[in-house]
Length: 93
Image 1 (tube, one colour):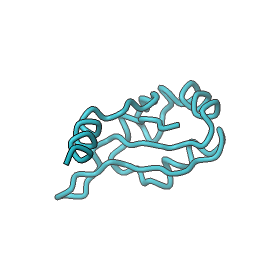
Image 2 (cartoon, rainbow, N blue to C red):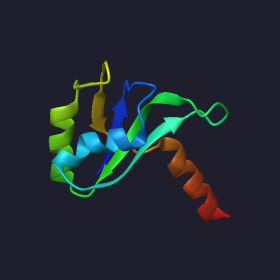
Image 3 (cartoon, rainbow, N blue to C red):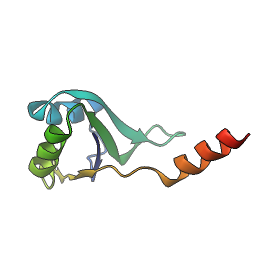
């Protein structure tokens, strides 16, 4: 299950984000989205969990949770609309 996390502290490291989710189940990966030029955090990221039930428990427990002075926004990630368009375009060519 892919989980979106918003309102992150800009100094948060990926490992710290991952550690917040580990008590709820196995985490496949975590990523904090960064600006390509400056490498600075954009204040949001994603966590991928193996089990959907664990992911739902993590969302319920961590949404609104204070992490380094910011209340996280934690929801199930939605598929990117642009990804579908580019995938379909690539399949046609």
